[in-house]
Length: 237
Image (cartoon, rainbow, N blue to C red; front, side):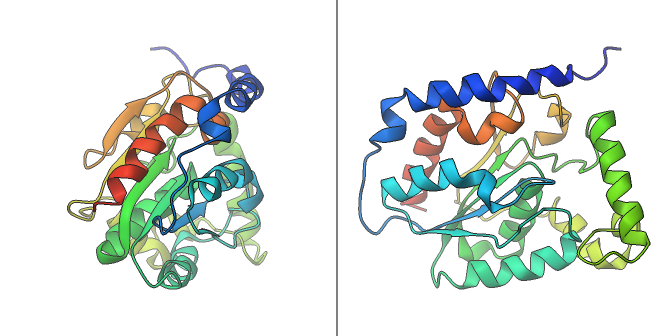
C-alpha cells in the first residue's frame, strides 16, 4: 500500500497561481449584474484572506461576495456552523457556498442544514466523508490544536469535538441530503498531499478531478473553469 503523496507536491501552488494570472477567464470573466451572492469559507489553519484571489474573480463576474468572518479555521465546527447560519441568512436570498478543505465540510453541512438558502455548493479538496482523513503531518497539527483546546484555550476545537454533542449535528449533516436541484461540486486531486482524495468523493455531488495541489485549488485555472460552469447553472437553480 502506497503512502500519501509527498508534501513537496504543495509547492505547485505557485505555478498554479502563475498560470491563473495568464488566463483570460480570470481577468475578464463574463460580468452580469444581479448574479447569485457567494459565501466563501476558508480551510484549516487559514482565514478569509486565503480566498482573496477567488473573491476578486467572483466580484468581477458580478457576484456579491461575503466572507465567513473566520480569521483562523481552528474552531469547533458546531459553533462555527451557528455563525455561518447568520452569514448565509444575511443575503436574504439563495446563495452559492464555496469552501476550501475544512471550509468545504462546513459549507456542505450548511447546505444540508438550509437547503432553501443554498443555490449551489462547491467543495475544494474537502474531506467530507472523513474530516480526519489527512496526511500524518496535518494530523499531528490537528492533535496539537485539540490539545490546546482541551487546556481551555478559547476559539479552538478540542478532542470532545470529534465525538461530542457540540458537533453531533455537524457530523450528521455531512451525510444528510443536499438541496434538490442545486448544483453540488466536489473537487479533488489524487496528488493532494494534505487530504486523502478518497474522502472528498461526496456521493451526492458531482466529483471533478484536477491535477494540482491541495492549497492551490483556489488559484487553479482548471477549477475556475468548473466554477464558471457551476455558477452559471446556479442562476437557474
